[in-house]
Structure formats: C-alpha cells, structure tokens
Length: 319
Ligand code: ADP
Ligand code: MG
Image 1 (cartoon, rainbow, N blue to C red):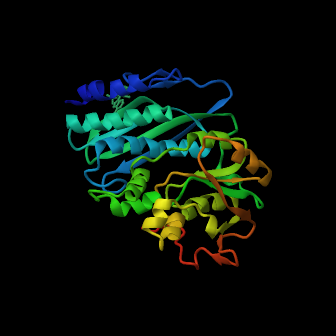
Image 2: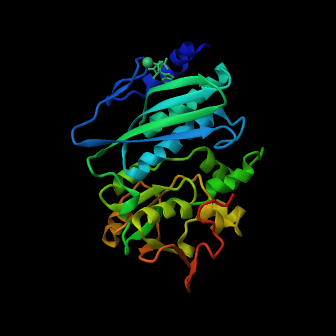
Image 3: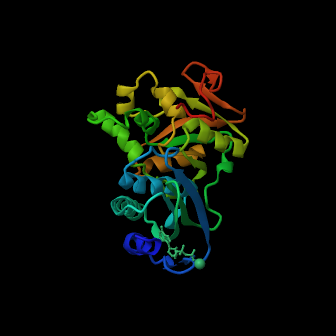
C-alpha cells in the first residue's frame, strides 16, 4: 500500500465511522474544518508516543490504537472539555496491512467510545511514532486550569491509583490470574475521564490527569497555584488487585506510579457533596487538602512527613 491507498483504505473508513457534525470537513483536503459554537473556546493538546519509550516494542497494534487516543483524550478530560475530533500523525517503518487493520480497529473503537472524530492526519515513514492532536470545546472561560487551587480546598481523585504501573511487571505474563488481568486492563485500556471532567467544570478549582504519578501531577497543580498539599495516606485509593499482588509497595505505586489516567482535582469544601451525589462516575475519593505551606505532606493519622523526606520521588515516578 502506498501512502494514499493507506489513507483511503485504512483511515477514511475510521473517519466515516467516527464523523460528527462539529467537523465540517474531515480528511481529504489540505486542512480539516471544525465548527465552533458561539461563546465556546477551542481546547487542544498533542501527545506523542514513541515505540520503546511510551509503549513496549512489538506492542499489539489494536491495543496501541486504543491507548494512544485514550491518553490524548485524558488531557481534554482534565480541562473539563467536551471532546470533538482529533488528527493523527503516524510514522511507520513499514506498511503492513494486518498491523494497520488492527491499529485502525483499536483506534476506531476508542474514537467512538470517547466521541472524537478522526478529522485528518499525516502519514510518513520512519520509526514507529504516533502523534495525536485532540480538539475539544468549553463554554468560554470555563476550562479547568491547574492554577486555581486555594488553601482550604479539598483534593479528590477518581478511581484507584498505581494499577497501570504495577501492570508493567506483568506485561509478558502468558497466563495471567484474574487479579493480574485486572491490573493489565488498567494499562492496556486507559479510560479518559471525560464525563467527570465535564462535571467538574464550574465546580473544581483545578484539575490534572494522573499520567506521571499522583505526586508529580498534583505537584503541577501546586506549582501553578502557589500552594502545598496534605495527603491522608490511608485514603489514597488502591485496588483490591494491587493490594493483593503488591501489598508492600502499593502505597509507593499509588503515589508515584504513572499511566492510570485518573483525574486529580481540587474543590471548595461546599462543592464536594454535589460531586459525591453525582452517579455513574465511579468512585471519587477525598484524599487531602490544599494548604498554604509549599510541598506535599503525607499524614499517616498521627503526623505530617514531607513526601520527599519520606522517600517518594516527586518527579521521577517509581519505575
Ligand atoms: P498535505 O500534503 O496537503 O499535507 P497529505 O497528502 O499529507 O496532505 O494528506 C492528504 C489528506 O489525508 C489530508 O486531508 C490529511 O488530513 C489526510 N491524512 C493523512 N494521513 C492521515 C491519517 N493517518 N489519518 C487520517 N487522515 C490522514
Ligand atoms: Mg496540503
């Protein structure tokens, strides 16, 4: 398949299957055209995944299709954006019809699931690399920024943390147990928390998606807002599978492991009950509070310890 056949046979069908009215013109011209409703702002972000760096060599193309879009869509969730469309920059060392078909299946599943239309892209030859630019919209002025956290705000997080990181050591397991499968699913099928992000819009004071680890990503909110945080160690949500398989390291993994794509957000205390009352968004856990003093303090029920002196690497993740 040459480049044009590849686009026509593999990616045009994905574009057709995922089309939505906000994309006035999809692939096939020099640019795509996106309609913007009045009083909305365009929210966009690009993520690049390189083989051997962001996903293992010879990774399943179908899983890669899902994962690459989910990871990109997660940034829209963190801003509280409504998903609209995406473009795909695909660099391939080869043109393997079976690989491409599988990749397109995973990509198409994710695009339908997250409500993102494939609006265009670029296809080149080279080491396997994917760049996905995602577009969303928010009512003007309502995107959730990292810079809005204030002392006294509560810190919440969705789902459980540490699972995707723990999965890394099981990626080549040929007959995984039920619990290992639960961890692997978290790595292979990240969920962008778009509905939660939309619910947080107008309520949360700041939000971030947990891609590099809770401490690292919460650290971005703290730095942008000029505040610190106290986290209640016992409340950091850890799954039954993580606790069963990695009991000793579960807290470290939940604090520092990346790839979970949950949302971490800050919110004024009087807004918290409104969130808890909302259904269908899975578990939300209150894990701490924003304080004036800079740094992250871990409270074990008795005292505060600095996350750094307690041995948790702020920026590196635990892997
Ligand atoms: P140009 O040379 O004008 O940049 P291209 O020849 O690269 O255009 O692409 C032709 C059309 O195919 C464009 O509309 C582009 O958006 C689309 N396209 C290219 N690669 C992809 C891809 N991987 N997925 C979806 N659309 C693609
Ligand atoms: Mg052109």
